[in-house]
Image (cartoon, rainbow over all chains, first blue to last red):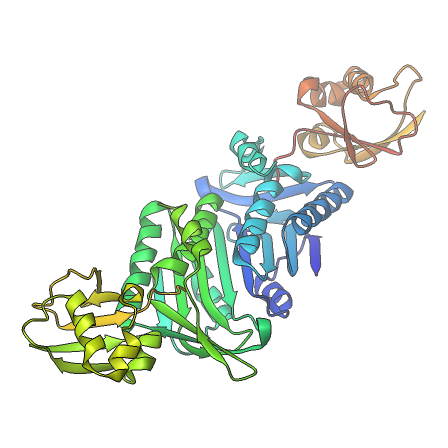
Length: 146
Length: 146
Length: 85
Length: 85
């Protein structure tokens, strides 16, 4: 029912939908986040603390399953180097009830921004690279759920 | 950019994702609603006023596009007879920003419940059938957006 | 006046047809009197329109109240409240 | 005391390694003093830990404050605030 992965390989969104949807759930909400090529970005590198990332995603998934009536949950985060257009994160939440599927999906994607042990480094076309600073806006969105 | 369909044929969710995702959007939120086989339901029939359904979905799609910064929007509603497990409705909203994609998707699915000219008839295993009455809860959820 | 009238959901089932062309007397000038006229006309009308407060209407695809005039209408649709998507 | 220390993000880059096994003097009893000791130890430490308020820490996968004791720790991780998913 709960599928949580942290992987350096590409996320196969269609295959994950197939696997998740096999249950024929009443309502399914999803979120796909992709690397944006803004400002000439050529690579996004996500560094992580493997044990803490896995634990963080697992805790988030179980928090969502405790809070909403979910029939299935998929939470996959990519790590390592990726290019613009590639999928960073996939959230799929299903429930008999649409409001629960939508809320769980929004909760997970907001919390991912603050709760998961990841650091982002952006590299640009001119060769410059920088580590991304935490954003206050993300914290505000995540705290809506407390 | 805006794709709105009302169709009696099955909704091919994977094909619609492919078509929609071709833009490589930063953030994509989706909602899939399927027929639930609760209480021995064997068929759901959606009757519609074709001109009004098309106009209603088109208005909703444009209201979402006016309100949020969307790079693509897909809104497909099935009509006619369908069985448990089949997809009734598909909403796909994409934006450079995750909050906009998620909000547009939630707005569209809430509003679909009240704004679209559809009537549902449920048929059960014992042969009984009944027209579904409007639900007050749906109206409440839709009015959050006013 | 000749008018195309369309029915949906259980109104359609009770009327036995999805739409029909009706010759309306001049005294029937708005949606409310059309519904009363249909209820009085025959048994199927009596069954479909016994509770006028449960009936909604659209003229040429636009939702209208019972006072809306019929003059100029191409299609009047009569139906119960929608149950949504 | 022998301790495994892991670094992440720009802390890792400035330290030049992802993790290392350190022999820590007995006077270094908590995370705050460990960070100060690393900053004083060599040039790479000075560069990575010049601003201790920008450093976060975890002991064996659990986030800890600067007062957290190192005794019993298998791994201490030192890193900047996370930037999330």
